[in-house]
Length: 237
Image (tube, rainbow, N blue to C red; front, side, top):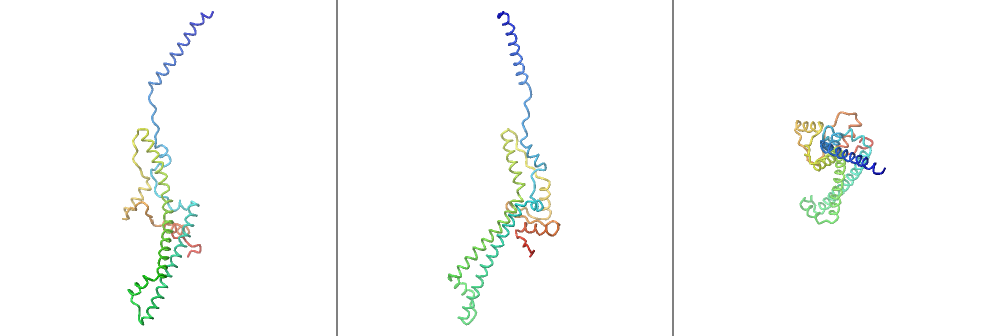
C-alpha cells in the first residue's frame, strides 16, 4: 500500500514545483515599478514653489516671536540710553575742561591745544573708552533686533530649502536629475515690484524696509516697530 502512494506524491510535488517556477517567470517578465518621486512631499507642502518672506501680519500671530522682539527691543533701549549717558559724560567733561583751560589762558582755548591735552588726560580717555564701548553694545543690541526680524522673515524659505535639499539628495541617490528650482508667484511678484520701483536687490543678510501696508493704527505701530527694530513705548511716546 505504501508503494501505491509514492507515484501520487511525486506527481503532486512536481506540479507544485512547476507552478512556483511559472510564477517566478511571470514576475520576471513584468515591468519594473516606477521610482517614487523624490519631490512629492516638497510639491505637496509648497505647491507654488519657494515661498517669499513671512509678512508682518503672519509674524504678528506668533506670540513667541513677538515676546522675543519685545525683549530684544527693551535691551536695545537700555543699551541706547547707556550709550547716550556715556557720550553726555564725555561732552560735559570736555566742556568743563575747555572752560578751565580758557580761564587759565585768559582767552578761548584753541581746539588743537585741547585735543592734544585731552589725548593724554587719563580720566577723559576712560570716559571716551566707556562711551565707545557702550555705543558698540547699543549697535549690537540694534543688530540683534534686526537679526531676529530677518530670521523670522526667512523662516519659510529656510524650511523650503531644507526640504528641497533632502529631495535633491534623494533624486541623486535614485539616479534621477535634480529638478530646477522654482519660485512662488509671490516671490516673483516681489522681485518684479522691486525692479519696477528701481530698488536694488538686497544682499543676503540685509534688512528689507518695505512700505507699511494700510492697516488699523495699532497694527501699523507694531509693524513699524518690527521693521525698524525700535520698540513702541507702552504710552505711545
